[in-house]
Amino acid sequence: MAVPKKKTSKSKRDMRRAHDFLSAPGISTCPQCKEPKLPHRVCESCGSYKGKDVVDAE
Image (cartoon, rainbow, N blue to C red; front, side):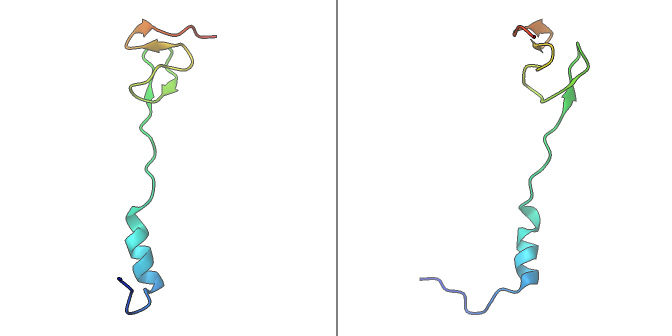
């Protein structure tokens, strides 16, 4: 069974965790209503995707 021989210091622990952060999602703008939206998804405000109305917007 693997057991650490020495205590891992806070510095080593934090350096290892330096790459574990979450990245922000890429946000694009809707070509029809110019509202921000997630890429490859239907626009929530106007209901269009790739220039076509696919969902009835309220």
